[in-house]
Length: 427
Image 1: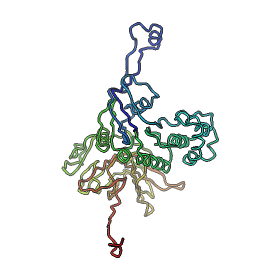
Image 2: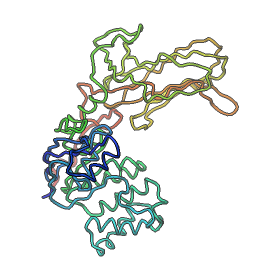
Image 3: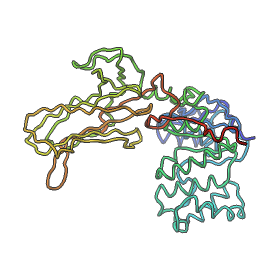
Image 4: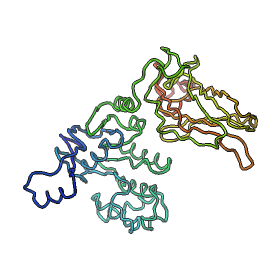
């Protein structure tokens, strides 16, 4: 039976004050150490039971990839031990082990041998590997001409050519087109159903919740929490986006405190925002409001809302339209609309316009980014006067009465289950 047991695992790297200190320690190894240890991981303990799927989550630099490298043996731990039973297949860094000057087919042979396959087994598996990778004639071209997506296709195809006892996957699957990603996850799901033990690293909490039964949250090199995947992912999101408070804080003169409004200061960061335009207008005071008029940035997934912003015109402009888009953290556009149905409106310098989009909320719990803009028509096309991309982070939380649903949007399915009368009692 396949399993992974990690005991008191830790990894530290030596830090020297100067390069000469490193040389001196190397020349005189018995002298007083001239380095300090920088710990990347410390005191990591967990067990992955046979057939279990465990997701590892944490921000960049938390130690996720280092942990996987120690588990697979590509990096040696400073302290502790890892014990694995069963045949292991690992997909870590994209195309790791591929030689750029060899063809894809030659790299398949070499990678397969590293995985423990014989030449005969590789020859037998080659047609299936080619078919799954879907890179066509590029299989006989040097890997250096491959795109990153093609490398990922071939690497995943080789690593999963046969069902392993233990499958370890880093974030390499974030590269590539959506259709192939779904194909990879489908194969992983089939392996899971057949009893493969899975260790999976991803920033995508929805994927962790779907695939994994248990989660590990790494924070600053420590195992911050472990347990049910949903619970651990919720803790990770709380760490990223802060604590929800049932109030609208003292954020501005137009905001009022209300027990029905939710406000999270940590979602007010403008780090991700991009701004551009020809300077003909200025968008300001962008906000999300509930149907009761409360300014919020956290709403329940059964609660409709309005996007409201003001536009101040800096010059006379004709055929103006206003728009908005909403997308996921990964950048997937979920919805967009504008007021261009009437061909646009003319405005004069100094005009201030209030724009409101009333939106029915069919979003599932998660974090979303809202963009808004004002544009006008010129001979060469529609030009943005001002656009603010990802200017609002909106968090959707689950309403108490919501049933068993998943995904990105709630399509409000109505269902019935009935038995055909003429079939009742028929053997």
